[in-house]
Amino acid sequence: MNNKQTCKRVVVGLSGGVDSAVTAWLLKQQGHEVVAIFMKNWEDDDDSAYCSSNIDFVDAAAVADVLGIEIEHVNFAAEYKDRVFAEFLREYQAGRTPNPDILCNAEIKFKAFLDHAMRLGAEMIATGHYARVRLNAATQQHELLKGLDPSKDQSYFLHRLNQAQLSKTLFPIGELHKTEVRRIATEIGLPNAKKKDSTGICFIGERPFREFLNRYIAREPGPVKDERGRVLGQHVGLSFYTLGQRQGLGIGGIKATGAELKAVQAKGQRGMGEHTPWFVARKDMASNTLWVVQGHDHPWLLSRSLQADSASWVAGTAPLDGLLAAKTRYRQSDAPCQLRVERDDRFDLRFSDPQWAVTPGQSAVLYDGEVCLGGGVIDAAQP
Image (cartoon, rainbow, N blue to C red):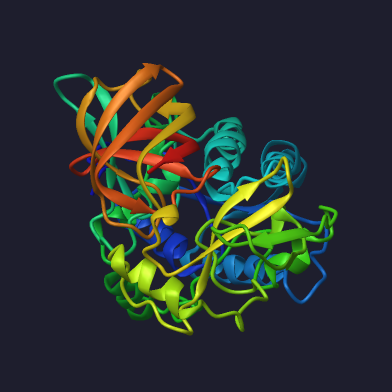
């Protein structure tokens, strides 16, 4: 494990899920004094069918009972609304696609929660994230490492954590694969051993995304155009679409002409045919126009370079310019790239291979092998 040290008072964020439950059990096995906190981060409609907060707390309390640890229910909804949700809405209104889970980790789970845990006398906090922390003996800095299960690694979502936060954090299941976590949960009789993993953004839950956003952002319909400038239909508001989106465009019946198909096929685009799907490629806020293209490999969907700002570096300062790897979205393999730092909070990346649907508002996260260096919010991308 990543905590070869004397036993400590550790406060665990117990979510009701199996990952945090096994985290708490592992820490108890290692001899730590373990206390649990359940974080409530959203309460606007916690009585609805889409909000699982009440069910999750019941599950977390059941786990705490089995493990014989205390659990406290803490409400961070006000902090979440101010620090995470307000920024989420601002970004969508500006036509960008933010990642609130990244902001939640930086502002709530490893700031508000960490502060609360320290007030309870905690020496460390722990969460059920698939990541690792290592103290580099040469630099005496804490490094954020990928989780050992490549299909579950969550370092992408944790890249904004700093030295102070990492020095107080344990990720016990970062050393394990998900199958092993499930096996342990079943073996020790945890009541949530077979509970389905949560998906999506915590305040949206399983509800339709557009339905949720429509409660906070006004619809401003406008034209949907193809690369030739033809109007193919109407969008409901640019905030409701993201680059690379294929579903929900309302233009599925429109076909390219024979001449157009020959032209795009001559450019080397694969899979083009009469029923080739349309993808969101650009959003023009000034003219309120949604631009769409046909074919997954259309040039408008591919970028070789990007600029990112609001950068945050795990070491506290930007890495040196040079060859690294990056992810521009969570479910993506590391892509080789050249880093050029403009200033500590802004950088450029140039990729060896074109990247698909690089989206402003999402995060570009940099890696040196298994070490997550940090990253920034994508501002713009170019072919």
